Image (cartoon, rainbow, N blue to C red; front, side, top):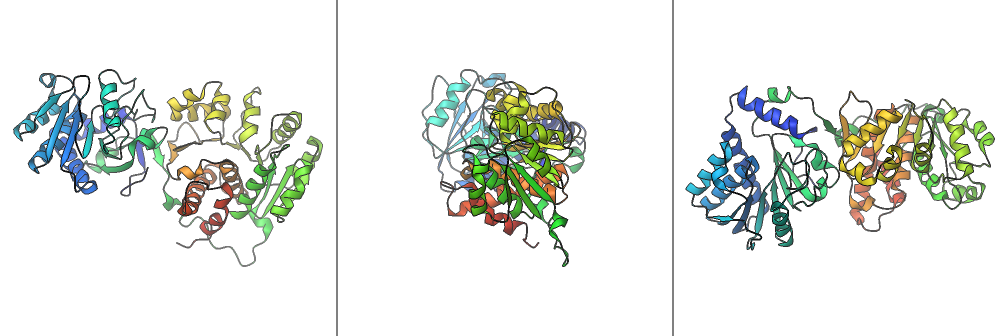
Length: 499
């Protein structure tokens, strides 16, 4: 997913969108049909901009206001002299309100309607999806499921209006089947589900217009989530004092690297150093020390057999990253137990999360938990499908149960710091990040920031931005085959860039 323009940071749920729409119409006196006309005009403008050579447009309309937007696009295309196929789902005699007005207007423009029955042959350069839109919260039913399949099978590029049909705009979950759009044109407010789960895959490029809704309308609704913006990185890393000392920038201890898993702690340690931690130590299996020192001699590596040695290493440390390559044997459990005894801020990742999931009453405020969906499912004792069905609810549930700050990783990573605050969403990055070790690098980044005095929340927010920005720079050479350590030189660039 890419963004064709600078998008707002505020994200909303479907119920909030309805409230915004109601407020604009009933309190600020903007006729609903006027908003619909603005939506249709903006959508048609985007269609022509994206596909300037398109001559044949196939527009699929449902019975609600999303279909109303589609009727207006059809009428505008007809007026432009394009060949228009309008596929109607349901009975136009049952249309009401603004959608009925839009349908009448399309008829007046000379648009010819085709009633959908089982399937329709699509002979077009572009398909406009105006079937279901925002607010869908249950599995797509017949005949809409078949209509969506027909659209996807046509291999014709698709522009979806507001939300790709079949995607839950609140969760990003695919409700059985969903339109695969190349571009989604969305209106009034950004929907949080477009940016996580299956939303990004189905949306394609996102283009937004607020339809000239007054700012006062938005003041009536607190956003459900906030998108992270790369602008947050500006001014974060100020020049260091000329008499700076390594002790000024904290000491990270990375704990993990069980038999055969030594690479995880190496990557986490390197990342912590590259974002500016003053000192980095690693506690790992003895057989990994030589490889670790050969790879990064700046790291203080200690091979340890058990918890007593680890207690000694914890003295003088600023923050502990525990979990990369930790494993699940007695050695791992003993080390985790010792780490949890300490009063230091913690970043808990990977195998440490899996061990905590099996423990009783593990909760604290001074830690960051960074599960991927599989680890999140173990923490909540549910399935990965349950996590992905509503990632927002899952992230909040983990935070409620375990405390601290929770970063639920995946497409559209989510951060929950407290129930009272909006969820923070990071929609950056690229598919090249789907390779081993990326999570270890992220843990090291966040740990390195914590060591330098960042708060838990701020360390996660800035750390995620550094992670995805570095990945995007590394991906210039190609996404396929990108490795986690490819991010390291770009991390150093980012924490030293001038505004």
